[in-house]
Image 1 (tube, rainbow, N blue to C red):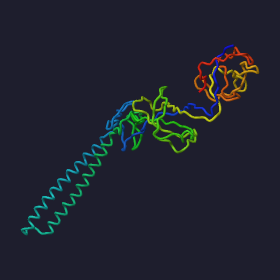
Image 2 (image 1 turned 60 degrees about the horizontal axis):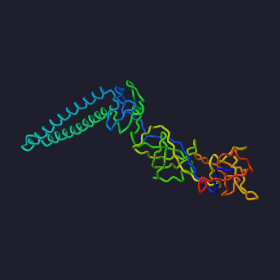
Image 3 (image 1 turned 90 degrees about the horizontal axis):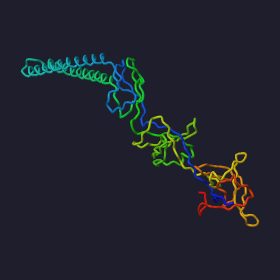
Image 4 (image 1 turned 90 degrees about the vertical axis):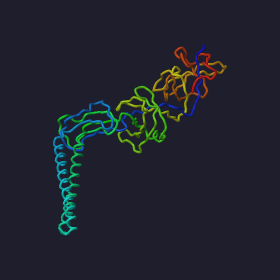
Length: 335
């Protein structure tokens, strides 16, 4: 009986594709808020909005701070005028001292009064600058190119300094954070490129860093991959790292169709070997599946090296049947 056959070839190891699950994160993911307290009067930023550095995101009430700035500006103007008047008086007294109409003491008093007013002017200028800074800080602006991920406060709320108002994530520079076993982490090379799966699509990403600690919850080591800027990704979505691993184990490749299910987790295959008269007959051997790859399986068991194995149609054959091996090509099968 002619049967399709492959050649079983033993090898000391096999390569398998391992997948490790991770998550996409933004290069920068931060919460922003005001440096000063106040009532939130305007929140122009909405979730999903793209913002550029300097764009206005939110606004606090400014009535009191504007009044404080106006008062500081008026105080500065008054002191400047007094200082100018004192300087003019000191100049007049200096002229009178020369012709003896005023004493040196009068001049010293005028000069020291001018210096005191200059110091008062510096203080008033600093107070005005502080009031202006307080007013400026009533406006929350975007610190970098970002996407508004979440609004954390509502209009009308009283916010304290540092209270989170918005959550921002970078619009570009996305990263994939993936946990891998420690032995895999030791083989990763910083700067090397790897294949990731995002939304079912393969993406080539560069390995930026590998952490030095083991996550106690997952017992994995964190690896960070830079995603290409032209890849569309969503923060929080899954990313899968595909790594080819070499497993040390004696065995060989067979097509799935060469296996018959047996008991206790084992599988049967039919070999083709010559009997005492040299006629090819089918014989039964047991194997264990170590890895499945598409339509192939890597097995180990009682199979001798380079033996012919029935590739398909096992239901038509019983051990001891005379068979004729038909190989698909000169090389046989196996890889």
